Length: 96
Image 1 (cartoon, rainbow, N blue to C red):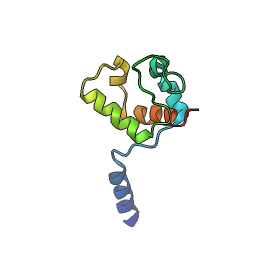
Image 2: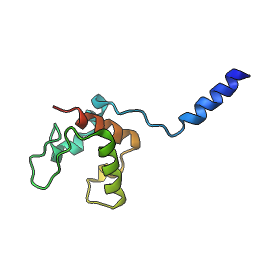
Image 3: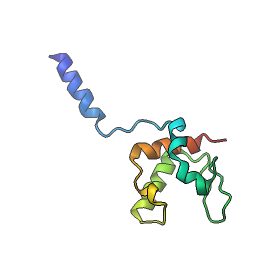
């Protein structure tokens, strides 16, 4: 019975938890981002913000705020899941 209660509590507590991002997977998912922000997050275009070495939690927060404000982002940025954002954030946070 204790095992059943423990499993229920573990399942209940882990709902909605996002795992830390994976920079290797993030690089694969960041193909569209790289077009403007550069492979390492340092853009070569005027007006495009630097995102290299940005703390992952900041990256995710800013992306969510930009989507909610209907900022002019590539269409693919609007379809990214929470885990996608975490992965991409990890990639740019540790680039260079």
